Length: 386
Image (cartoon, rainbow, N blue to C red; front, side, top):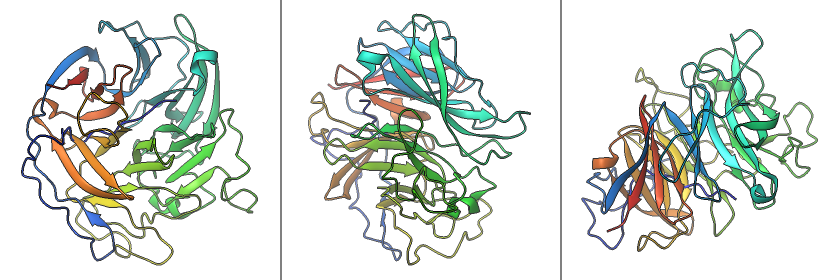
């Protein structure tokens, strides 16, 4: 099973904290606000593993230590243990590579060692390329490309504009899969509409069928794929290794990035409630709280622009086991959250050599943390303790 680590700050808890303030108390709406800690140089060493990737988006380790890396324009490559890039693998589905769209996440099947199956999330174009939506395909990883490619999920409706596709793939312990998505920007009201898949976290079986215990199965006029709703744009997700619960971080607008723990059938508020404002400065929705809508566990204002997430289970970094790491696109950093009883007890960030657009974070088979940087010449970086 693939473990995802979110990196927004890289911190070794045995080292002195850098201008770490006490966590802010719950806001008027009930959620805990980030104290916006500083982001100094990371402890240890940041080593470049590979370079020359065009806007890499997702990373997954193969059992032999090589990496699958997606590039948003629509390429999937293998990065060797020596950092060499393979030629683009054949068989990748056609993607809508405009705006924020393109080839997004990659994940290994829980039984990859037996079936060689992988999953890709991507922006899928409509028949005339004027519309697009998030999709997931499964395929068998062959010697030089993908085989037996099958689309198992398609977001409906497909709409115009090139943003807010999500998307991360996370496997539950029962073998079903969560797919995180976005509201597709101009269609944010549909995040509250249960006949639409925009602004939803969905749960499906690995063959694309619907689990019988999904919360809305059997309800007339409601999409049975839906797990939770009222989400803006979820680009960070991980299954907690101890509890088995899904954790996500989604983009807010101008402020209001949210750490959530999406539960079956629950409404997470967007765009009715939010801790952010529109980019114009105007108010969004009705405020920060409303009956029947969930509060985030934690929120950021100013934002971290989250992407990628992992729960660290290794022992290479003292004090890190059990921490959640999140990638920050803006201002660019690695973020570490310490959790206790479902709440954030500490946030730490590291910039310096990591002061780039961190798009994804992963834990390698060696127990070290790897990140990818989102740029025209994106890199794979490894974080090595002192």
